[in-house]
Length: 362
Image (cartoon, rainbow, N blue to C red):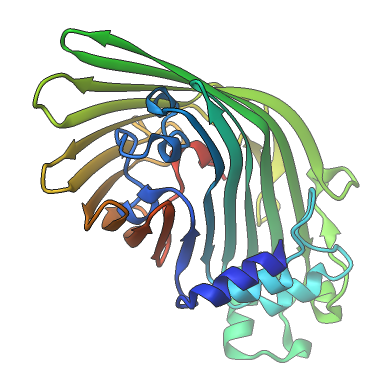
């Protein structure tokens, strides 16, 4: 996985400060907006399961492959982290890793999926990895102003916290209900989830030695926690008949919430109730013009149940049958830009928004 990611980054020659969406959803370049878009329904079903009702024929492929980061550069993170089942770092060298990334909070987010759609039914496998290196304020101050290992302060601490969720598999189906006023599409996604969680921390002595870290108490002596669960997402799309060019959408992520919850500790060692997947209500509207322009507006996490509430705005302009430029803005993550060439999409921004079906409350 590490080698593939590095090859992709080198081939694309994108700036190291950018988050990257490679071959993923065309909406990544539109600030993440697009729940009501049905231009390319096979690509949109990850955001809204109702889009599968508009897919014709058989589709097979990989999509929504995204590498996002905050803090250290993406290439450096991929080189240093061990992305394997249940873990992102060897506990015997975790303290050295935390010392290396002591200047600021660092986050790596990787998503992707692979699957097939036929006759209104899609079967996909995919997942998300969200890994964070969290030095506390004394450790950050030391890294920025001193750097001498012997001077690491007594109250310095660094934490590694990571969550990984794999869908094995997602099963999505949808149907259309034609009416005189328009078409209503309904989609349901059943997600069979495998959940992994790990949390290590290192204190002053461990940071100075640069070797092993300590397992957080919630791990109960194990390297990681593993859970299995099931969730259901629900999606609706409404497209009026006639010359009206707009589409409306509603997506309920985790309509049936997965039973994944436990007592965890944060970067300060304080206990809290950890529930990574919560029900969220999301709405969107899309307007498609005869000029080839597409405008989309999404309202994420209505009611702010998961603390992810935001507005996303997106624009795409077709330059031909297989070429399009896009731009967008998300109120939490800022500006994005994208390019579509045939079935290939690339987008980048200082911080890409996460698509609705991949939202973690973490």
